[in-house]
Amino acid sequence: MPAERLPNRITTPQFLARKRKGQPIVMVTAYDAPQGRLADAAGVDAILVGDSVGMTTLGYDTTLPVTLEDLLYHTRAVLRGQSARRADACPDGVPTNAERARGARHALIIADMAFGTYGASVTNGVKAGMRLIAEGGAQAVKLEGAGPVVLETIRRLVDIGVPVMGHLGMTPQSIHRFGGFKVQGKTEDAAQTLTDGAVALEQAGAFGIVLEVIPSDLARRVTGSITIPTIGIGAGLECDGQVQVLHDLVGFTDGPAFKHARRYAELGAALLEAIAAYSLDVRERRFPGPENFF
Ligand code: KIV
Image (tube, rainbow, N blue to C red; front, side):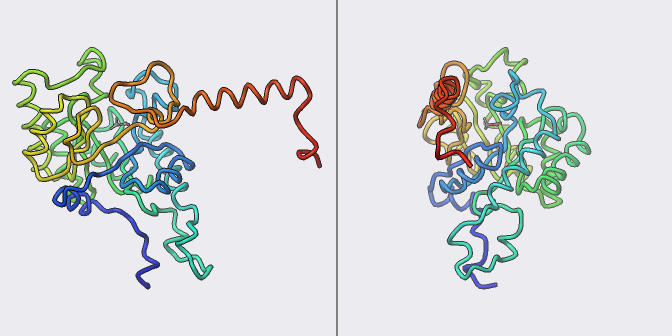
C-alpha cells in the first residue's frame, strides 16, 4: 500500500511521544456521526465517546444510568462519521480499503466504560472493554479510579492488546460519594492518594490519565510524577493535554457554563433562533418559498 494511502491515524504510542516532545494533546468528546466528522476535520488528536453522553444527549442528570449498549451505539456512530470520505484521501478517485472501512480517519477513538460494567469484577470489566473495541470499533477505552479491581482490569486489558486510559480526580461516576461536582485533591492526604493512584495506573499499563477538576499545582505534581501523558479538564495548563465536553465548548448545554470550559460558539442560542424563525415562517405562510416547491 503506497504511503499516501495509509490512514493518518493517531496511535497510543504517539500519545507518549507527544509528552516527551512537550507537544500538547487535544481531546474532545463526540457522540454521533456529524460530531465525529467535524472533530476529525478540525484535527483533534483524540475523540472521547464519553459517558457524558448521558447529560449532553440522553437527558440524564449524571453519567450513572449510561449503559455499555449506549456507549457501543454512540461509538459506532462517531466512527461512521469519521469514515466519511475526505477529498485528500483518495486522489485518483478509487476508494482504498482503508477508506471503505468504517474506521477512524485521524483521531484516536477512546470509548468510556459505563458505570457498573467494571470495578466489581475483573472478568466483567475485561469483557466490557473488549466489546467496546470489537463491536464499537474504539481504539482504546477509559475507566475511572485506581482501586485494586480497576488496576487488575487494566493489566488484563493491556495484556490482551487493549489500550486503556485512566481517569482521576472529580470522577463523575463517584458523584454521590463526593456529594456533587466538587474540586478533588485539596488536602495533602488526598493529593498524595491521587498521585499514588496515577503512578499505579501507569504501572498497570495505562497509556494516559484524565485529571478532572483538581488544583493546578496537584496536576503539575502528578504530571511530573509519571511518564504517560496527563489530559486535564479543569486541572490547569500544565497537563500534557486538555479534554473538553464538546457541548460545553459550543454552548449547547442547559444551565450555567462550567468554570473549566471556554465557550467558542453559542450553538444552543443559534438553534433556538433558527427553530423559532422557521415556526414563524410556517405560521405566516412564508415557508415553503418558491425555491422549495416541486
Ligand atoms: O465522559 C466524559 O466526557 C469524560 C470527560 C469529562 C473527561 O469523562
